[in-house]
Image (cartoon, rainbow, N blue to C red; front, side, top):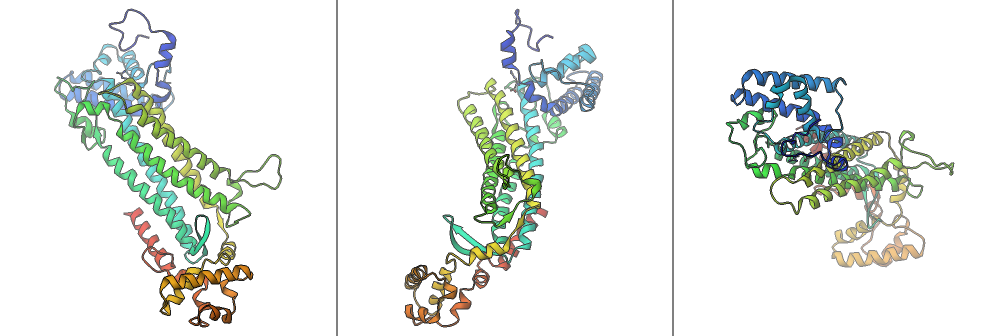
Length: 458
Ligand code: ARG
């Protein structure tokens, strides 16, 4: 078949150059957006009398039929074409002859691809929002059951202070809520329609860009035609937010991989989401979580690909930009599949509060509370800190913990200690006392859950 741009050429393109130049294996995924964009454009050409109304209606009717045919498998996308835009236009002309040749009036593939791509990215961002919502609900549902489940909180992966599992899980839920808000923000930035920018300079035809923008579900047309065909910020935006989501997912996956080990045993992953070893009969491996952690790398690389590809481009469209779709589509596919598998895995996870409690009773995670006890007896914090450090040192040497160190030993470190020290350093009471805004007490965690649920419903 002839190229759309055959006119000035007398020779055929080299076959390897053709293959190298082609993007249809990737951009065929935007066939729906391409046809919908063409329908809106054709209607507008008719309504503004740039082309006769009858011709416009015939084009629209045929494009609708083509969309149905692709959806029903009656029309296969021919991958020998340069891109999806060439295929759709060629098929239209094949079906309705000369009338089809009117479609590309006042349009370029540059504004066409920008429109298709931003429409595709908008739709996928809406999907990502609903995926991430489900994951946040999964986390808050677990958190609700564990507002009083005590576990060690860590800094430097060393036991630090007691927290609740609910608090821990809500930390992740709140991270993902921030990501959700970012998706919503970038979605509103994607609400400008590039169609009608033509090659770069706009057009002399009396087009109605408001009409096409509205028909395609955009808030308004984009402001500057050069920017519109050169802009791929929306692509970077979605790759950036996907990267954040994947970085957060990678962290919680790492956490759960550690917690699934015999050394921690804070949780058990269901068999449906675990794998075995071909040689070691005892193994139950957290492959899904490891894959999520591994796949995060792809999303970071995709963002990098876009930024590096774009950084040296002069205005306006350059063919380098054809590389954008593969990066964005891979980033979106990866983020969606990882969020989905994590949400499903989360449903079957069994947390093991007894093991968490046992771990919380070792490692002096109530040492800060012991110091705070002395502060409550009017000792300055720095002195209280020093005495408690000496007590911990004594306990380590004598194989004891704060809970079972006799009261006379306490008193030998400071006469301020009384029997109520044992209540004060009880792990559950340490947690409940941390009732500061955002803290780990069950009351505070409940209000965090309430906030997140309200945000999700609002
Ligand atoms: N396949 C191209 C892309 O993805 C479409 C735009 C081509 N425009 C052009 N003037 N060659 O970027």
